[in-house]
Length: 190
Ligand SMILES: Cc1cn([C@H]2C[C@H](O)[C@@H](COP(=O)(O)OP(=O)(O)OP(=O)(O)O)O2)c(=O)[nH]c1=O
Picture (cartoon, rainbow, N blue to C red):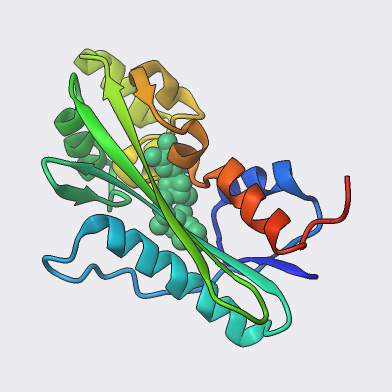
C-alpha cells in the first residue's frame, strides 16, 4: 500500500522516515485559516485532515497522511512568524512560561474511515536573556516553525522541560502514527 505524506515540512519527512522509508512526499496548499472561536485541538485535526484529503484527491489508492502543529499560550494560537520581529515577539511571549503544543494527525486509507488524533505537549521555556534571544533569531531557525522555535535544533537551548511527546512538538506523533499504519497493514513486515 503506497504512503503519501501531504507535507512540505522537512521535519515531518525526517520523522516519518523513522517508521518507514517507503513513502512519497506530496506538499499541498491547504487554507490554514482558523475558524474564529473553534476549539484549537479540533482546528489542528481539521487542518491535518484538509491536507490529507488534498493529497488523496491526487492519490486515491494511497494512505495519505496530514499533520498540523500549533503552539498555544493563554488560549491563543501561535503559527509560523511572518518575520524576525514577529518571531521575537512570540519568543518573548513564551519566555519563562509554559505553553502547549497541539499536533493534529489525519491518516486517510484508500478505503475506510479516516484515523485522526491530536496530541498535547506542555513545553516550559527558560527565562532566557535578550542576548540569547538575539543569537537564536540570528540563526534563522525560528522563521518556518510554529511558535518561532525548533525544539530539535538550537531551540533546545530555550527549553527548561517538556511534558508529553517530543516528536509531536517537532511535528509528528511518531509512535501513534506507527500504530495506525501497522493497524492499516500499510507497513512491510519487520
Ligand atoms: C514547535 C515546533 C514546530 N516545528 C515546525 C514543524 C512544522 O514544520 C511547523 C509547523 O507548521 P505547520 O503549518 O504545522 O507545518 P508546515 O507548514 O511546516 O508544513 P505542512 O503544513 O506542509 O505539513 O513548525 C518544528 O520543526 N519544531 C518545533 O519545535
